[in-house]
Length: 137
Image (tube, rainbow, N blue to C red; front, side):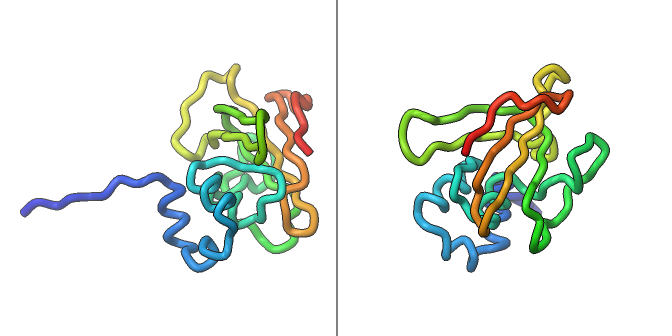
């Protein structure tokens, strides 16, 4: 007997898990989330599909937690892979340590995603020492 196991991205898994909500996103939001990218103006579901569960709080020891209503800041630990600021929509791709990323300690940063009125209003890239490196708003 042969067993074949499909290998999709974690974004694929989350997209299937929340297929009804995913269909309600705009085409741009669907595309960005499917590629693991986050942009200003995205709703929490699109960020969750793109990045997964945020950390319980900002410290290294916290584990991912399912986002709850009213969580206005989501914290991630990992590395900034790439960004696009040359045209709309501006986006970043941040690889969370819980997405299977192995990085040198010097490359590890924090990303804070801040929501206002149910949309990403600000993205904070912070160093391991919690110094603000960049802010997108």
